[in-house]
Image (tube, rainbow, N blue to C red; front, side, top):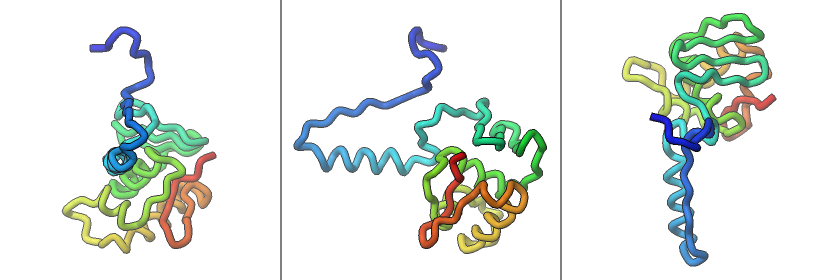
Length: 141
């Protein structure tokens, strides 16, 4: 049920703290930022994500680059979707692995770099950026 006046802005949280509650504020922000797929973007499983010429349709697990369908493995898709939900944010290989790994995934978190390599080959070298010593991020275009 849609509430009157909610528009299309999605959900948001308003927090209010006194100046002497700095620790509570920091703890709250840390807790919110640790939630998987927490984002300021208004995106659901029904909403395609658009980044330049890249289009991701989460519900159907489809990816298009310049209108051409790109075939991705389930793990590649999950990595791309994670990065696309937080474009510009740097994720370490371990963070990516912990967010998208399934029980059947045999390669450890060190195998993420090879997955990123394969994604770059399919999507173009400028789509995912390596931040030396820190991890990977979806390049904002």
